[in-house]
Length: 158
Image (cartoon, rainbow, N blue to C red; front, side, top):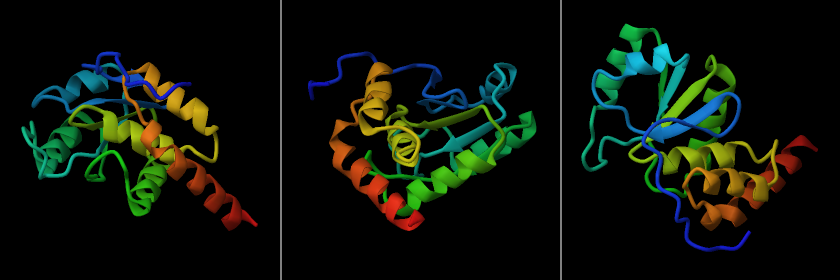
């Protein structure tokens, strides 16, 4: 795949990355019930409280999630180049929360990057980049980091 700029529109509602993980922009106050009605069982909030135009604080999301029966984890991440500790927390959440899971940030880009980094043991880098590009997120800038993480995980298994 070329490294052209991603020209697809950003999603305005959850989009599927895998059978159990969907990403998208931050939900509006009062809209988490719609996620429950759509079949989601868990949400991962990747927005830090420092995001501009924050629609809900993490505490407000947690309260609303609990009120509609969604499992909730907050893993705040700055930018689309996540730290290893955040990737590990995201991976742990993916393996421990009941699916399907909706992960969100301001636009869904950070969540897509985290999903890709957390999925390097299961999918090759080109597939991860392609899936994210297909839904409107260009994560080609973390290609080398994904490859390095895959090698690190292989070394840990040996």
